[in-house]
Length: 321
Ligand SMILES: NC(=O)c1ccc[n+]([C@@H]2O[C@H](COP(=O)([O-])OP(=O)(O)OC[C@H]3O[C@@H](n4cnc5c(N)ncnc54)[C@H](OP(=O)(O)O)[C@@H]3O)[C@@H](O)[C@H]2O)c1
View (tube, helix red, strand yellow):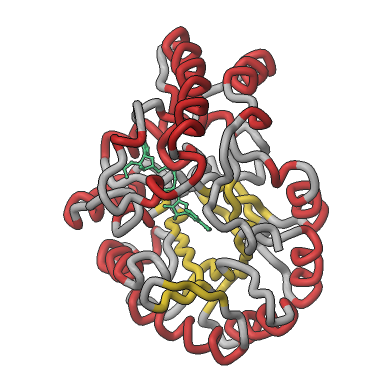
């Protein structure tokens, strides 16, 4: 069973590799590589990384893991977020696009990237310049398909007019539904596939966390409004409702959250992230969970997105641009 992202065929669920290197506590390289191998065995084909994860070391890890099985993988990476010491900026000028792809190809140990995303839309470079430079990479055979991440509807239209956009990767989960009003319909009108990231609400929708004390030192969630103080306490009450629904059905809260995302449409391929085989297997199993309209309504009533407390990033200025 596969799903289509534009003209790209992938397994029904992808694997987010980001947390293997950074953001959610320390990982173990051997186990991360084993997770990638097990994912491929289980029918996951889409692997997701980015040059800014680590930075750079996540692409290197993925490259090592797939070196002897490159043809089994639909390899996706991203560029555009520049990490400079503690700061960040966004670049999409042609020179930067061309330099970025060379770095990613080298670190991934491949001569072609299947899906190359602009990670965030820059404020100071027209999208036509960025996508034009990305299209040159397709012509040169360095990249097969183009994607955007967290782009707004108007940007999607302008980008797609320059070169077909295969996928939009944006946060989409039970508690992050803001793309549904305008961005998802625009993507569908243009035939652009949808890749929800953080479909498990960065792990919180699994019911695994009881308080912010469960996030270790350096964990991204500890500085994110949605995962802090009173906001987290309020959000965890909703997760408790989701857990009760899941228990009644003999599945986990994470599986219900993921199955809900899988039910958004046949053009939707979520990329839950994990560095543990146990979680990977649980997540893959959620892709074949069948939910009725009543089930979906009960899940949405347990975690009403309009009641979620706190923004999903400390700085939302580059989102939906
Ligand atoms: N385009 C963008 O701007 C953007 C932003 C964020 C992420 N992404 C991509 O999207 C991928 C997925 O998003 P994400 O990793 O942020 O969030 P996520 O998939 O919603 O959640 C990941 C977290 O959930 C935990 N987890 C996973 N499966 C679990 C299970 N079955 N039971 C309990 N806990 C479970 C993971 O734990 P462990 O780490 O302990 O396994 C990790 O802490 C990333 O890997 C990355 O490739 C893209």
